[in-house]
Image (cartoon, rainbow, N blue to C red; front, side, top):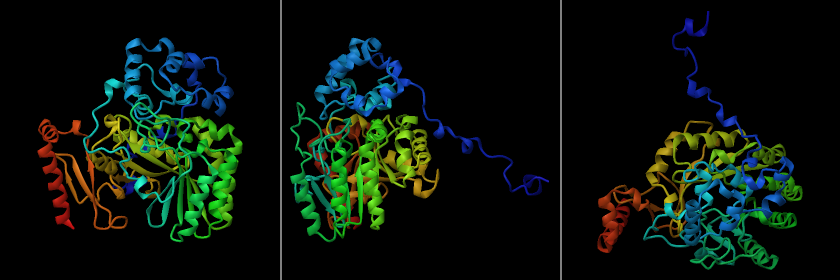
Length: 456
């Protein structure tokens, strides 16, 4: 007798949604051949990181040369306007260009992240600041942010293989733009020595994030130099190398073996010393993950490298339950631990990408329980003004009508309160009118802050 016949409490069958395996279905065709400029490239030629790096799209003219007549003049004019208004330099890898759906680029999640269109940009929130997280305010030496008691952020350089429209560090990363003169942190060993000296002088520092920029743009010997130097500091127990390369140029890990081997040597030396060295990466959408991605990450996974992912929540990119669930499952399938989903920071020029806080709260409920707890990301918000990361649910006050949230951060800045603001274009017409009125605006902010103080 079958279990279901002997005991009706047993399910007759597994619900169809539980049997879905599409997160394992990774693209493995020669998709780049659909792009005129790449049509004749073999798999080996396309997967050479040197080709990827040297042939990034860095201007409208280059985009037109690569895409050609696949797009009409009106689209290119839209791109031109977007580039002029953007705070980030344009730099998009052939890998990403090839994954964009050029039949519908206006709604494509990769185009939205990397190629600005003037027609889709929105006016910045009036409370926005260029360095919205106030990283420079907590910088004791150039290129180091020491905000949390036991950990610090080491900005080893200020360049990346690809530039994201939504970069939190648009005040420093990439080339100067028409609107922004950047604060630059070059990959200089003399500057790094200042960082090492400071870390040595602060015994409470146990955890270092090595970022930038992107450590994929460091030479192999630089990866090893930084890693081994920090391992030599007795009180440093953990370090995280941060790179978006697995998501936007996985060829770097496949064909630059010297770089990958240097990272693995630091990880293994850390293990011998009882210290944890990990790789943190940044996938935002399931379509970024292909069989090329698997080939890039597999050698690291096989050598026991801990890989964690930090996603940025973005409107029309990953703000639906199906997309976020698929991303989480696909990452887990490749051995990457979904770590954080960040509510989009308040960054200049990308108001069209930000979602409301309520969107993050709803998505967290949809993702929770999908897979194991250790493979479930925490949905967090990095508060404006330097309060650090807070769970999205941990607000003191959230005025959804006016899009104003207030957070406390007792472990980082005890006694202080910090704002976050929903995009104004997602509010009601009445609320939008209140934001346009300076008197109403000041009153709303003071009211939210007072209500938060009353909660303490």
